[in-house]
Image (cartoon, rainbow, N blue to C red):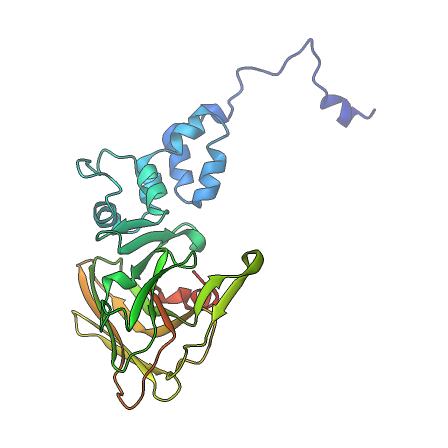
Length: 294
């Protein structure tokens, strides 16, 4: 063996110098400072190195850097902390973990979560059930029915058999982190059920009236922003996110948003529509959202 190789062999008579510094000798605060610049999955991996890294990875300032600016509002709104908890006492790592899961509020009709797909700075996303909307004739079984489905976050959707005048109105008061957001209605033409061998089947027999006149989607905000879009509903048998418009949040104050879906041309009926929810995502997620079904 060459001299270079022989020096790399540790003799049992000469064990490594136990006095040399190792990873465990690094100050915990220094490790935490480094971890603050990593993504959450990387932090969790390094927490397994040793006890010092594990303790450093739990530092509040590490995880507070990953939380959105409105995390206290989110935690209180979705009761992540519990009614009697103080968010200053709950570890920020625990708050982060809970907010990355779907959290219901407003009697279970709304859901908020942090989307982790954008790396070290998760984005706030919202979904609003059809039950939270004011819908024309919703209590009249001649027009609407509530049907169970695994294809909805809320496990039920509003199904329209037939109606002349359609209005679905909603509003939300929420504290968003600064940024640009997009609002969508999640709709499907046709009623889904499970067929033979659990195969997905969508019945479109009652679908009619959506290509005669467009549906108008609108939104407005408490600071004076407005947006609308007119869409014919063509695609049958699949969930589609219909883009209503975008709005911008410049400050952390609560913002009130009103939104609607309207088709009030009474020269014809329309029907065969499933209304699942209204969703709000950061605008940069638009392309991703259009591809997903939930």
